[in-house]
Structures are given as C-alpha cells and as structure tokens.
Image (cartoon, rainbow, N blue to C red; front, side, top):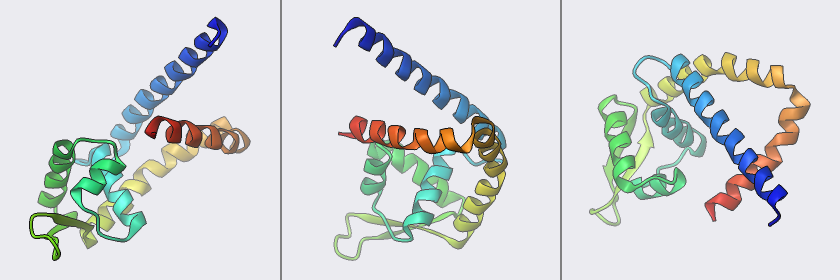
Length: 145
C-alpha cells in the first residue's frame, strides 16, 4: 500500500470514528429516558426479525461478548421489554423475544430519533446518502470477516 493510500485509509477511518461518536452522542440525547443505544439496537433488531434469538446469536449479531449481551438483556427484561424463556430443545440455553411493551418502547425510540436522523440526512442530501450506503455496507462486511 502506498503512503498516499495509507493516509487515505487513515483519513477514512478517522472520519468514520468521528461520525460514530457524534451520532452516538446525538442519539443518546433524544432517546426516551432510561433507554440506552444498546437497548434500542437490540429492540430494533428483534422487532425487525420478528423471531426469537438466543443470547449467543444476539451477541454475534452485535459483535459483543456474551457477558455484555447478557447485561443488556437483563436490563431489557427488568424493564419488561423482552421475554426470556428456556430453549425447549436444550434447557441450558435461553431464547429471547420482544414483548408488546418492548415494541412500544422501540416505536417511541424510533419516533424520538426520526426527526434527528431525517434532518441530518436531509442536510447531507438524499443523493449523497444513497451513494454512501453501498460503501458503508461494504466496509461493514469487510470488517466483520
């Protein structure tokens, strides 16, 4: 890799990290009281998949340790946002699904963050957002290998 390519790669990752940090701060400010970004992410995933997942599957999806995912799931269960049940095929395992109050909490979070993300996307421009998505998806896939 040439020196110019290295500088370009470092600049790309510097921008990605800055955007990540700023996005997290902005989302944390508008999420409903008591909801963390990790909680929203899990609820949003469960709402989209509309199926049960094991804690291990969720940890893999979010590239977290099982311990970190267990902590998040414990908080969501305590809040009543998810149901955790034994796996009927293997009682040592658990299965997680979103509860009706979890769907409501996720919907409230989407309503809270929608103006923010819509405003940012509008300011950047729909064409630029559409053009950036394939690159961001490709980067995500390359990094998850």
